[in-house]
Length: 76
Image 1: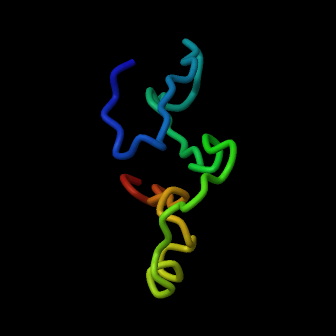
Image 2: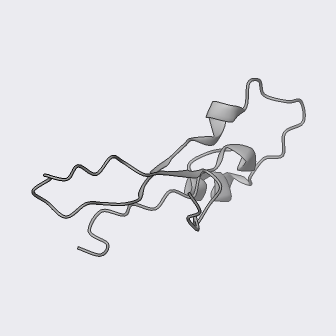
């Protein structure tokens, strides 16, 4: 499956499409994986946002920031 994804934390998959499904199929579905899922421990001296940036991003560490954008309502 070769789908262009907006961010590496976004994963795509193709659900099964049955021949008798009453609705038009969604051929490619995506979901976001949080960055802490792949960080098994917090390394020493991990870079930090400034206090103002941390409040804006919702985390103190850039490595744990996820640029999630809701797709609800887009294209509907």
